[in-house]
Image 1 (cartoon, rainbow, N blue to C red):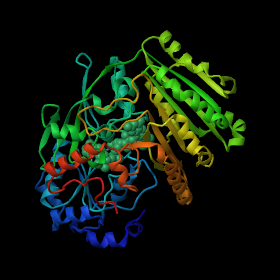
Image 2 (spheres, rainbow, N blue to C red):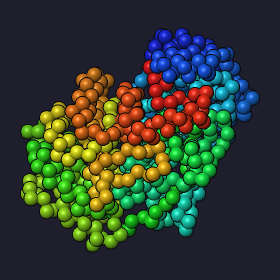
Image 3 (cartoon, rainbow, N blue to C red):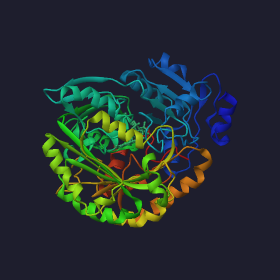
Image 4 (cartoon, rainbow, N blue to C red):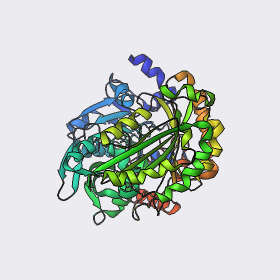
Length: 514
Ligand SMILES: Cc1cc2nc3c(=O)[nH]c(=O)nc-3n(C[C@H](O)[C@H](O)[C@H](O)COP(=O)(O)OP(=O)(O)OC[C@H]3O[C@@H](n4cnc5c(N)ncnc54)[C@H](O)[C@@H]3O)c2cc1C
């Protein structure tokens, strides 16, 4: 897109108020409407900015882009996972090359009274890394696994390492880590948000296996946070997500022995019988060990089952169960429970107790959540019976856009729901996790699919115990950020932000979004 077209995309109010000129000097203007944002902008003040000083005075080594630069649009929007993209954008993007560049960018922002947003992998569904105005610190190049120590069961890595990359680095050492499910997603924002992980029932959420985090704070100091050092930061970073008031530059992780017999079963059932299926499956969850990841999906039928799903508008019910076991016999015996479903003869296709590995699990998840789609996502926790979620949504799901995934993770084990770490901002849990991942291709379908999605969330509302900050629309519904925390944790997060970032250097959950 040429520069003129790009400028037309920027709301006129924002473009004028940001006062951009091609020489790289600009005047800060506040385009945000919330009271909090206005207050924060006032505290930061406004002034003239010489972008060249980021390199000459602060020693920044990476690329610096203002919105007058030709590469700006690609840098701001190109790597965002969700192709349903907002128009809001920063004034400046600083693409760091190392941790010292993060320090330089933060100090420059402070000196020039620019608010700061952080881009990890750009995978958050509602793109909170894009804010109106301010400086965006892009961490894309902080992408190294620094060390793996299989004997001590520890690893240190920079944030832009994907789920697939971390397992590929660890598994050959016989080690693993509770990474997320989809191959491309980066640990960066995943580990700051909570981390709904593979083998969650045994290993817990990703944040539970962080031993320390290296952080650049709002003063531009590099600090290490752990249970004993800078514990406020350690608490807030493990769950603060898009509301965290620092830049995480290295994660120190605790590792686990790689389960030797990861094994999976998959069953497709007719959509018509999904309530009966859910009624049976829900109560089975506590009979399965917590090493089983059990899910019930509503998806479009694969091509070989399309004809059989014609009467349900192409929808089928899909049950997947993955056990992180150490022996094939134990895995088989555990998964055999799913073959005792009284309506098993209705099964359209099944694959029972097949050996698998992280590579194959990522391929399967990647196929359900492909790249380059437009999407609206709200994933929530519930304590309702599984069948109640399906009763509430069954008719509506028949009309789901074809690429949509409706997922219910049914936590297993005697002690479900899974515990959250006692000393972290991440505090929401439930017996079930999931909701609609509404996905589609064409901009022409935006309005109707957004409306379908919003109605789906409304139908689920009576059953929702809480939201998950990394997979819910905290931009469209700012209250979903608050609903992602226990009230005491939400309050403490705000208090710690005020204590450690009193000038409001970092955008919080809601500044700069409108
Ligand atoms: C296909 C797909 C599958 C997913 N599967 C899972 C899953 O299985 N489990 C799960 O828990 N989540 C899952 N997610 C959600 C994902 O973990 C979050 O969206 C997460 O924020 C992605 O990290 P990111 O670095 O790409 O975030 P970004 O979009 O880059 O950043 C989001 C926000 O996080 C903050 N942030 C990110 N990195 C840093 C940092 N280093 N320092 C300071 N602030 C930072 C910033 O405030 C930023 O605005 C999935 C997302 C997608 C797209």
